[in-house]
Structure formats: structure tokens, C-alpha cells
Length: 296
Image (cartoon, rainbow, N blue to C red; front, side, top):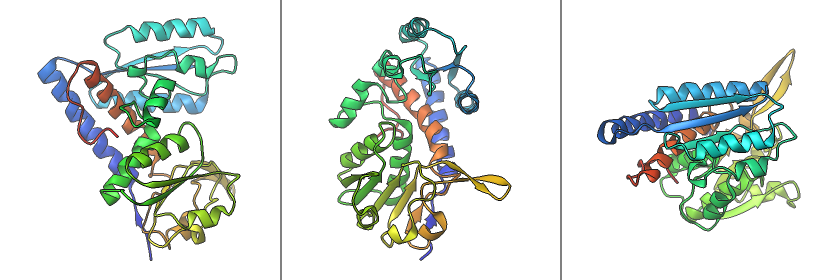
């Protein structure tokens, strides 16, 4: 068996097209422009690249992009004051504080100071609780992207056995809650799981989000299973480095029914879903219908 390779980059492009179409309708029919504010503190190179990409794609979708770049010595009080200002700004529908923050800033305190209705990262404790209890929430972008890819591959996920490898607050736990919401039977596996390969072999769906390069081998995969690889790891390849996922793609692709590659898999879906969340937040703020196919 050779797995179908799920092209996340192409799928993300269709999500961005849907976002842009909905933004155009909001402007034409309601005179509303969704706005995304991104706050970057410090000079982390990876964060800078990510923020630039967010700005570019936000503008391309027809939305308003507000960037706030601050020095690494910004005080917590100053950052909280900026967030309070953005919470009160009716032009801003989504607020994202780029992580990681400098160590002197309390990330939990900062994230929980964002208006939950504008928390397009889905990290606020209120959104975590709403998602965990099956209520309407802002959903973290990467798990939402994974869910979109799974729905596109299978349609209904009801009754499928799903194993999520990784228990992070950003991916593993919300992913498990989303799959429960789709009526899957869900197991969260992690570093302490006994016989991890045996657990994974029972899964119709495997979501790998553990941060260990090529940990999941092909002989862990149930024949025909769908494998969603969230990992992005840099590993040496001779004199250069290569990007690989948490799954050994070559061996897993011989067994799986469908698999996401790294790169061009889950990664592009994250920013696409950030744009989708911003449009959803805008629609909710104005009591308008939410965009179809862009929410959990």
C-alpha cells in the first residue's frame, strides 16, 4: 500500500480563498472589515518570520492587519495595557500575542488578559473550558487545521478510533476534545504510555504532536490508517539540515491509507485557520452568520 499524501498547502489555499470571499461579503453587505492585531515582544527570529507571514496573508485576505512590535524589556504592565486597549478597540476582532514571550513575562497571565471573544489562538482558559465541555469556543488553529484535513479525507469521523500522541495544551489536549466532538473513540498517548507502538496500532486516525523527529515508525501504523503529522523538527542531513515530522514518513507511507507530509502538511493550515478564526470572531461580534466550513 502507498498512502495518499494529503497536501496541506493546497488545502490551506482553499481555506484562504473561502476566508477572502467571506471578508469581501462582510465589506460589501455590512461595511465591516475583520481586523487582526498581532503583538510581538522581542527579537526571536522564528517569531519574526511567522509574524511577517501572518501580516502578509491577513492583508491578502482583505482583512485589516495591526502589528505591535515591542522591545524585549517591555514590562508586564505595559503589555497588559496594550492588550486592554486592543480589547476595547471595535476595529480589532482578533488578538494574537506571539509566543514565546521573554521570560520575565507571565504567558498565562498575558493570554488570559485577552478578551476570550477575540482570542483567535484559542488559548484563553475560558475557550479551553468551552471546548472541553463541547460548547462554542475559539479553537486553537493547529488542531482546527488537523480537523479540517480529517473531515476532507473521511467526511464523518464518527466511531473511528483515534490516538493523539502528545498532551500539550496547544495541540494534544484540544485535538482530543475536537475528535471527541466528532464522536471518535479517543486515546491520548504520551511519553509514559506503556506499549506506545501497540496503542498506536489500534488507531484509525493517528495525530502525532510530540516533538520527537521521526519517532512514529511504519510498523506502528494500522494498515489504511490516516496519519496527521504535526511535528516540525530540524535534523542534520550531511552538511545541511532537513525538516522532518514526528512520523517516519517513508515507512509510514507504505502502510497508511493517507498521510500528511512535512513540510506542506499541517504547517500551512495553522495560519489559514488563524485567518478563519478572525473572520469567525468578527461574525460573532456583529451577530452575523459564521462562515461555513471554517469552524469546528
